[in-house]
Image (cartoon, rainbow over all chains, first blue to last red; front, top):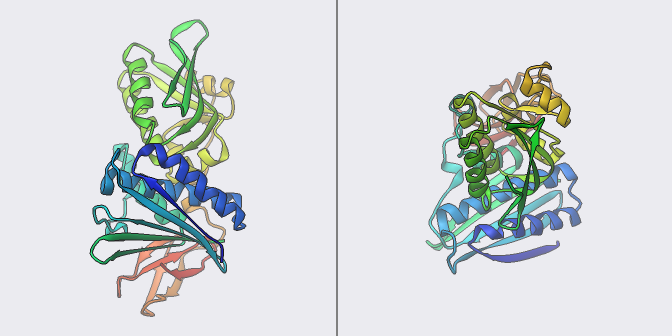
Length: 137
Length: 184
């Protein structure tokens, strides 16, 4: 089982690094181009969410991303020690309502739910946020 | 109007269209995400507020967009409509188009294949292409689907693929476009 991990400081400038890291490993694990796009977009939303809502930008804090393939699953594990946030508990976006008001934000979690096959969240040892995203490849 | 590069990640090259100062093409090169969207939004808003009423976004060189980037385009659409103007996009790469489609935003934006078609859309000379079905609702399987909840076995019915909560056990269920049911 191939597994690689990266640590990134909590800064929006690192979003592109996170995307590149994840998409390269997804490609090396045999994901299709369509799946790589979905994985990249979903992970980008979560990386931005961590920086914006859990850790804050321009701090010395950071988060890790681990990627691995297990059988037909491409698995991405995010961990950080910032503010607790469980995306699974959030209400689903009503797209019709969103469209009618032409809102500019708030679709990141919707994208993750639509594009990934599994999403799991754990809050461990009362300090570590772990989000696991899974794409069947 | 001069070419600018936002945070070493997005180059914006303005070009006047047909000698009219209120119609411009903005050529985008790079990516658009949460990192650079605020500056991109600020720059284009200032153009609209300075009197530009028609914008054609050339997206041939735009290789990535996040939901925040699409939010910026949504903001432009709102602002330019308030000023009785309009905007269109063309040359969207597949990855970028996929995000627009997933979010269903193709029905709000005028999206063309090339510059001439985009200009014609703005001038009302050409009928808008029907928006493709959003990815999230595309289906090769004949819905509705009746199935048992993979968590508790409760009989459920859905008219489209997606992720749902079981009305019985509240477990999360994913149904793909081929009718395959999984616990999520």
